Image (cartoon, rainbow, N blue to C red; front, side, top):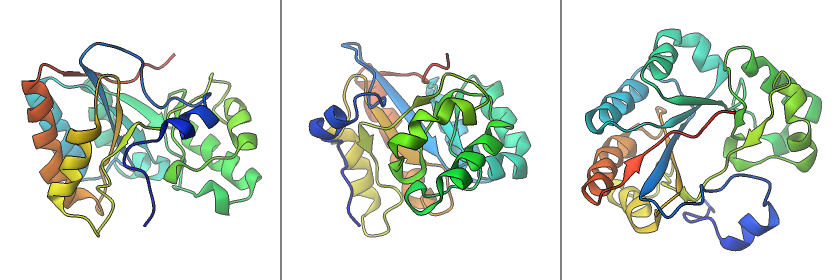
Length: 211
């Protein structure tokens, strides 16, 4: 499985119109969680965030919002931000443009946000340019990441997942975890320790702004 734990500078330079991190000198981090809501993983995440007063951003899959509306409502009620992660977690590189854009539009019926994260981090320039129309006229913002925990990777240990975040994150980093069945074991180990580590160092965790 090939991926960058830390997004290289040259990738950010090639795609400067996507958001990779939030420029700041303050001790601020941006936790993001993809693929939920999930009946076990998402409540766990919410409970851990609440313990330290952390806010985060949840990139939700539309079909999961429909399946677990009470969990989705809890995300919002507890002050977190949500983003569109398509209706059916489609891979844009393997999906016709019209099908992909309709899938985003369907998710936008249930997820009130201008933030969009493409599943697998894959999106074409055509798709990016047409996001606003798909997202009901919202001024769409593509949110990528600075640090990937790799909690989805069955080949790494839970400790390695934690190290990916602790060793690579810094002021303004957008960090990716997954509140999903596949990632839950590593998430359950790494998230509490990530929160403890950075809180002890004086960091605060904020959600991404919707505007």
